[in-house]
Length: 171
Image 1 (cartoon, rainbow, N blue to C red):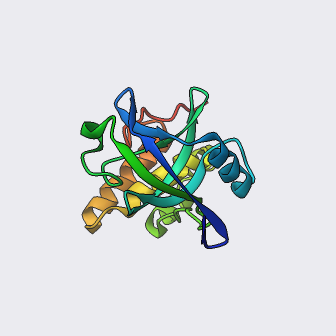
Image 2: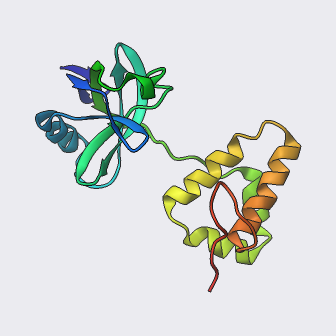
Image 3: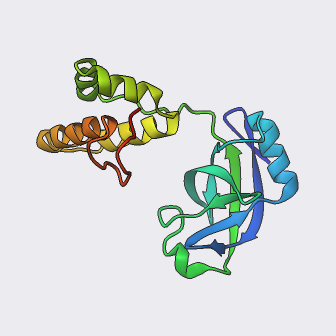
């Protein structure tokens, strides 16, 4: 075991499996227990870092249908959906870095001008806020950002779909 920041890095081998369309590996119970102890939690997502076949990754460890799973996407392991059954060399450690996504300044300005959208935004879950903010930060052109902010505002007011979701229902 090596140190990653102040956290231990654990090594194991696992066979790439599939649930639905999602490739994943199960974490060996002793390592999972150590990760939960390092993270000081055994519920909710756990931010992690490590390597898969010596290639670095950043991911979130999730519990689904009673099993903690490390989902393996194509940025972590190229062609991962075609590699089911492959034995992988994995390292894993808790990632202590802050992963919050700041609100886009232009979006924050628009929210301050619209009490309905602002109230709706403040009532949303942290994960939905993060998803909205991450999406708005991806815009490369000003026109795209303006269009996406308008869509986000309409979404929060229950007027339109946004980021693949139905409009927010207002009371």
